[in-house]
Amino acid sequence: MMVDDIHRMTITYATYHQNKCNTLIKERDAVSTIMESKIKVLVQSVAQSAGAVVSSNPAIGKSQAGTALTKVG
Image (cartoon, rainbow, N blue to C red; front, side):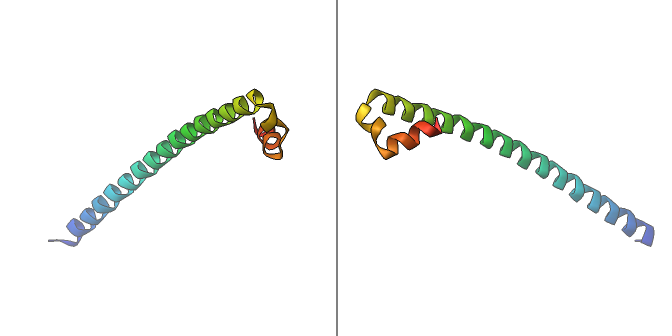
């Protein structure tokens, strides 16, 4: 094997791994975006459910916890 061949192989190896790394970064960003969206929907759903419970039960609404829950929604 010649020095040029080794150099070419090294560049090919480095390029492959750089491309792989770039792909993994894009995939991580996509998963992060999806998870953030799902968590946002879940939090909104919990807030709406908690608000419905508080508004349907006046005793809870007057409690310290009920007051705090109405501020979240």
